[in-house]
Length: 485
Image 1 (cartoon, one colour):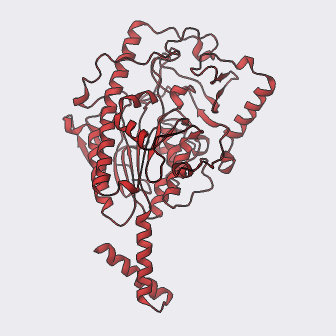
Image 2 (spheres, one colour):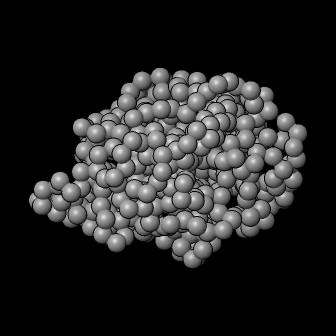
C-alpha cells in the first residue's frame, strides 16, 4: 500500500513540475515506471574464497545449478590472490587499472582500493543508483575492519574483517559491531545463509529489484568446517593428477626448479587439508540450497540470476607446491562460474574465454545501469540469454606482484607453498604464456600438455614468441575499450 501511494505521489509531482493536463495520466505513467523497475531481474551473487574447481564435485546443489544453468568452462581470474581479484570483480578493471596488486600495503588491500577511488566505481554503486536494493554479506576486502565506513552502493552491510576461523568473529551489522562466539549456531557460513535468506524475503516483498552478494570465507584456510560436517568424507585424499608431486621440474622457472619432491608427511598434511576443504564447502552448498528456497518461497526465483564463483583457485601438491595460489598455473587461475536465471540455457557449457573482469559489466547490464567506458571486461549477458553472437576473445591477462611475504597476511606463502616473483601472463583457449620479472618465461601448449608439465618456451619459434609478447604488451597496458577489443 505504501509503495503504491508513493508511486502516485511521484505522479502528482510530475504533474506539478511539467504542467501535465491530466493527474491520472501522470500517475499511471509513474505506476508503469514502478512496475518496470520491479520487472528488472534480481541478482544473488555467491563469491567463495579459494574454492578450486575440484571442490565442485562435493557440492550437489552447485552441480544442480550446472544442470539447470550455464557453466563457463574457460573462466579465469586476472590475479590469483584475494584482494586484487575482488577489486577486479567489483570494478570490472584489471589490477593494473585498479592499482590493487596485493593484499596490503601501498599497492594492496582495502585502503589502497579506496585511495584510488575504486569504491565509487563498483557494480553496487551503479545498481543502487539505478534503483536496486543492495546488500553485502561476509568478506569484503583484505584490510577491512568492522567499524570502517560502509562503502558507497550498499543499503545493507553485514561484513567481517577476519572470519577465517569460522567462529569468534565480529560482524559489522549496518554500523553496529556484533560479536559471534564458538557455538555451532555462530558458524559464519550458516550466519550468512540465515541473513541472506532473510534479506531475500524482505527485499522480494518490496517494489525494487535487489542485488545480494554473499562472500564466504570458506573454504579459505584454516579450512574450518561446520561442526555437523567435521566427520564427512573419511579417508578422502587430494587428487593425484599427473602434475601432483611432479617428477621432472628442470624445465620450470628458477623460482620453482629447486622445489624438492613432497615427502610422506607433507602429502599427509595436503590430504588432511583437502578433506577439510571438502568438508567446509558443505555449508556453502547448504547455503545455496537455503537461498534458492528463499527465492522460491518469495516468488522471486523466476526473475533472479544466481551466480556462483570463487575469487581464485588453489594448488595442493601440483608441481611440488604444498598449498596456496598466486601462480599462473590453471590450478590457481581457473575457477568455477555457474549461472542460473531467466533465459539462461540449461545444462550448457560455454567454452569461450571469460574472466572476472566480466562480472561487473554483466551485473550492470542486467540491472539496466550504464556500464562505464573505463570497464575492462565484457558483459556476459548475451550468453546468459542463450545468444552466441559474442566475438571470441583471443586471450585474457593474468598479473601478479610478488613474492608475497607480508607478515600477518592470511595468504602469505613460504617457499614450500609456492611464492612466485612478479609476472604477467596470457591465457588463450589452448596456451599459457608467462613472462617473469627478470626475463624468464614459460609456455605450455594445453592441447598437447593440459597439465602444464612441459615448459616449451625455449622451443617457440621467433615469430610465435614475438606474437605472444606483442599480445601480452597490449593487454598489460590496456584500459577500457582497448582491453575489450
